[in-house]
Image 1 (cartoon, helix red, strand yellow):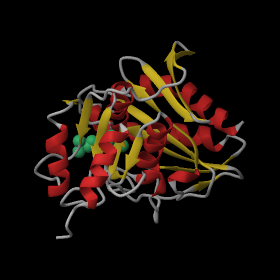
Image 2 (cartoon, helix red, strand yellow):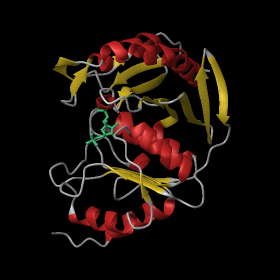
Image 3 (cartoon, protein in one colour):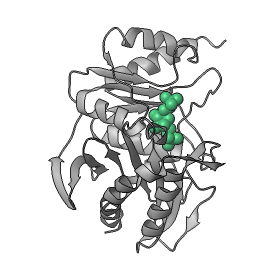
Length: 283
Ligand code: FBP
């Protein structure tokens, strides 16, 4: 089964990625396809994942945040990877991760074409969270073992945390108004790595957003590599997602490196966001 082979490969590579981060924290001269400064670790992790995942029988395409285009490697499913999410956290020794989306369509592909998605967190423990076949499972990757941590993870009914990227000076008025309400109800938990911030919402309930910004109407995060796979995990766990108008899984995609506003979490907070944005009187 190709999906199993993909996440087996990710589980096997994760400890090696973690061990290699310390010597690769420095920025390269180059930028990635999104124009972001690359760290040596970004490029190195992409090389490892690319080599491994393109060799899997049943994987037909590989793409990553760090590469301009799609790598054809045969017939089968398409794998889109953010090899090192939150890499700017390396300097401060805060969590970073890897995000993987498995699409049953040529890339760029819509979120509804996902058949599985997941992420690794290189945190106090290295964990692998995978959403597939209607269930979210988390394993701890310790000494070559895969120890089950959660066998059927769902968002709790009493949400407690929020994390919003960007900041009040860069938010649009409609998001700022939404944030003003949320921050009096939930505790702020924002650490600058999507996978770690979203995992707090999966664990404790609440909402994560990297929203539209006045200067960046499509926000900062990449749709193919971050928004859609993360939305798939949270929706599989009983939560909801939105780009402000609809589920991120329904958002059209024109180009591989398109960005999107990302809002994921407990349905009550996603519904509130969409209601607020719908009532918005066009400027
Ligand atoms: P990359 O490091 O893969 O570019 O990820 C972007 C990211 O680091 C996300 O992981 C995180 O949610 C966001 O940017 C943090 O942005 P900011 O530094 O503006 O808070």
